[in-house]
Length: 291
Length: 292
Image (cartoon, each protein chain N blue to C red):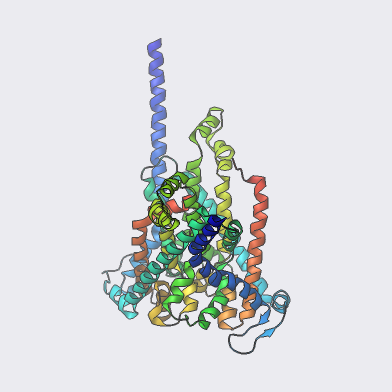
């Protein structure tokens, strides 16, 4: 009797186990399929980028041409000044990111740890500006930059985007979580606020700074409307503007366009592979990132 | 007293760099933009104070403005709904028992770092009549070809689809964090009480992660009202203004027609709409957002 029971139980268990396994396998296959569908656009971009120009628009459709046209890459790379655009993008991204980190960690420290009159109201004002669409600011900023002679300069690309309230907000949220005791000990040892900020708070806030850095860099990297408005010279163009220019010149040459698009995407992809953890964690932590 | 004074001075030192930038690049432009909206303000030439005439003209003398706002609202509504639903679905899926979870999450999130112009060019190619991949697929399966970006009926929806493809990974990450934050014990308790998987999700998980949903909805709506790159590059607002959005209209008025004052008034209407919707959501959250 008892033996029968255990056998019955066992078979139920294996049945359930098998059902669970099949479900898991189906789940796995389905999600892989969805991911595949999701990346098809990118794969198709690569396929087109390496097709000879005269085989892109043919009927019937051929997925792969008879040879890979590596010369497309050279054509896209040299026909406009891509190396320069890439250099500009990296330069502007790094400078703006450094400026953002410097100014927003300082103000965030003041908001998080120092007592002064009107602190909370000022912080609220900062927060309030997060809701203002950039486009409200863009017209007067354009006039201001023309007035102070920054139009068509690296300064215009680097400085104004560095002062978003977002950085201050993110870093303040981070500093607030650092326990007071750490500072108290340092204070007793005779640390002044500047050394506290530099030697104690900044090192402790490294994960937050990393998130802010990658947000700021990616935002700059993707930025299109801002550089479009404040620059007109070719030697100041960043990758998005360069791609826009390329589109103007090669309107319907799709293999060249897809090749240029691929070139524009590859650095993004590398940045992503290097920093995706910081990005995802940063978003999960603040619920936001960038503008 | 003296110590307090000194701390204030220290704070000022720390605040100064950011505060100066904040004043020059945010506070002053905000005020200036409102002032500009009260002027007839050509880029070159005489400025003239016109009071609220720009606003009056927007609503009474500019039929295009209504169309542009309608387009924008359509975009925001379609984009926000699709984005949130897909992000939620995949977040739930990608917190279940799957191998290589991290890889799948990373794949869906990846387009976040690509400049919008690049993805827009890519989708323009996919959407192309005759030779675009989607129409090739439609043809193969015997469907009629669709001129996605070239027809007034489908252009805006096509822009929405490509934007969702690029954008939902962001909210997906927020939702995954929200889902992982719900204590396992509560879900198990509900299951023991006889709740099925789906009921547990709607009765326990969803309310507990409602703050992050609330936040995602607000941020998605605010940012999608500012859509520009996709329509500017993808369709240039056409065909027949069917994809001209608010920010594009600001850009055209300010930098093509050189009407800076008029463009500023459009920007302020856009700002007002965003504010009203955000404030409304803020008060409506009492009805559905659960804070513990």
